[in-house]
Image (cartoon, rainbow, N blue to C red; front, side):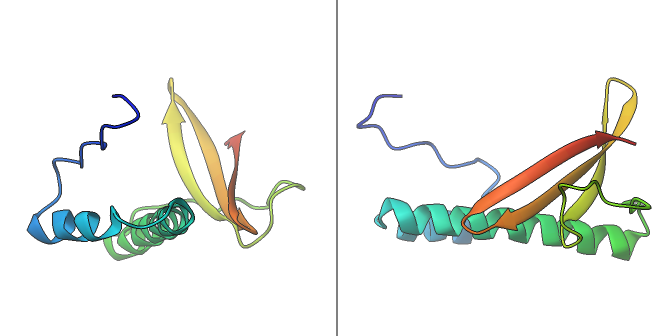
Length: 102
């Protein structure tokens, strides 16, 4: 993709999603980054809500690492047969994360 080519939207979008992206395409970069941050938080919230509704265990740790705030969202991910806690939180305008073996 060159600097003049607009990125291709995800194929999973329905008509409403494509219309929303078309509306956002004309916005400035800071607005798009703010929307992106919001969408990341919305996706994490949706995953937590879905996990609670389906009874999936997100397995909260007994204690958070020293450099991770208690407000961080926690999920469990498996990499190469080993499970890890994946912490994610907002720090001002940035999204921070920390991964630790379970």
